[in-house]
Length: 275
Length: 290
Image (cartoon, rainbow over all chains, first blue to last red; front, side, top):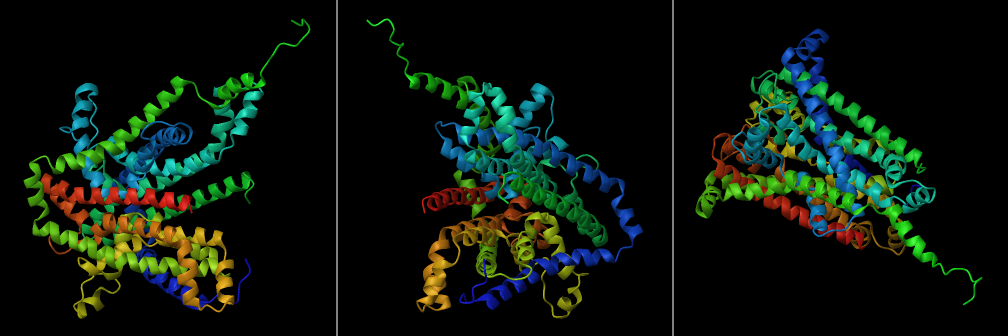
């Protein structure tokens, strides 16, 4: 697109956007970086390699990984069902997928805690029948993060399935492929990049998630304490340095994840010939 | 009665089951997948939603009503509305101007600007709150200056608004940028060449074209502004009746074992979520039929 000289408003719109972006996002975010310069490298390592800190990172990343994986499997099935089949109530199901985006995380948090706590509706059932406690364990965190992850997976896989050419499946069938072969050799490889993107988005969101997790997690140090909660705890104890060091580490990790997601999308577009 | 006539084969008769076999899954596969999908969504989405209503009314309508009409609940609701009323318009104006600058002009650093707009989405809510504590907290960069002038930002309403601004920053812009990019600027150029001014062109040509996407962005921005928990929780200080937004009020009530109070507050937020979903579906439908 060539720059058009007739279009008005370049300076005011760009000027406002740049100033507003700096004031609301860039300057506040940069404080985290500058604040961490106050720490020496040794101090930083000392904070980060603390046993409790490491255990929160382990809990956060493992639960987010598990939740994103489970949500990927089920999200894929949901997307498939929504695109390929017709059944009563499909439109409602379709609209409900986005509930985790629309429902405030605190509400999701207290509801899931109420359902899965040992005296709760499903919590009691699971303890009585399988002797499986969900709340106040990493498993509870996984449950909350599955809820958060659902729309990320469904909404990235769905458009790919919608655009998928049935001709490819027909070609496979005409060459004698069974339905199973068509799925594993034609359909699945085509949705895999989108599925990976959805997985990565869900994972990145899950690592930073706070509101929906803290109620069901019980927040027991070394067991079910997540990184965001430890940041809050440090801040409440006026340990600003500790909170900053942990937050910066997490921020760097999420930026690396974001970069990977963007590279993945670039690779997908290149592979499908859109670039 | 002709022996050498070829047997009558209707090609369509062969093709149809063959096509079906290629493109359709067997009934048992179809129904089990539907059952899995519906079961999964029921367990993770419908059940939680239903439980909010059930818990809120578990002690009857009178208890629900008295929980809602408590001064703390009402002031939390007011603060939530105030926050949304300030943050949503600001981020909308930003979204429109950023989209205008990015999609109507070429300039250096355009792709960096586009990337930076999405930045708040990749920051954990807790960190979004923390950065404002680092800026305006008692030991923060401007902490001393604010103290001198007796201005409170952290543990006060301004902090809540700033954190919400940060968290809801990208919503409007990221809806408008792809749409306005795709639309191109021929229509606006036509209006301008016919003598319309810049503002007139925007109101009469651009706005009607982008209104559904704009509303969509505003809707999502508003839902997040009213529902944000993590970022606001860090800067609010949880002062009842003063710095509690509705989501924070829900948390405080829940932690105090005031289950009715917590779920009464939650029911308002859940209603907001459902209204958001309904409007969102309607807007998607409008956009698809544009």
